[in-house]
Image (cartoon, rainbow over all chains, first blue to last red; front, side, top):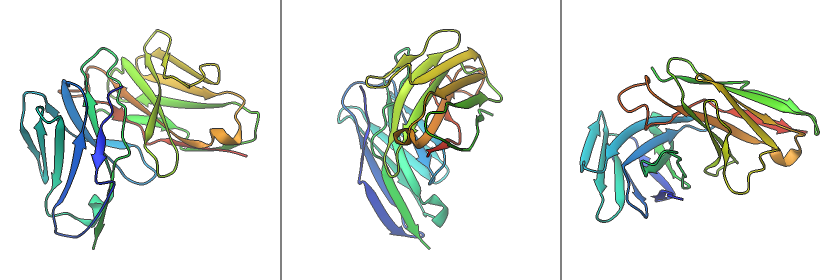
Length: 112
Length: 120
């Protein structure tokens, strides 16, 4: 199974600071997606970056992808208390099933 | 667009009873739906993948007779936890993918809000 592993497991920062979390995976991918989960809720899709892309932006989010290192990073700039959540990456092999095998995620706490 | 709902949000039941959870894609055709379970402070564990009109594919270690999945239409999948026991208590989350939910909806999974099951 293709599982993304997030690092660090937990991150605590002050409001206004930037938060960076990383994802590593093991095999070739079609794309990689990042999701956010607020406590006790479902996952929210944040961004999708394709294997031929190196960087992508969406609002305060910046995602990079390095296929040679099989890694991705998610940067949240000017963090807010509302960004407090768990963040998961989902490497997508692009096969028919499109299954996602999630890692343990990064638990981000933004302190007001 | 790409909204997925789950019903119920919460369910408490007695041991031995069966519980049905519904997952609906509200504004797109969900050709594929996924069911996950999540224990407190842990990651989501994929239980099964279902394609509309065909039998679900279960992940290793997931009992198909225990967790019955039906994906009878392009907007509805159900998960039935049969003869539930306290160890089945968990947070169950569905997701859906398919055409019509956006530029990358075939690749992206859109998640429901989850159903919290407590078996007494």
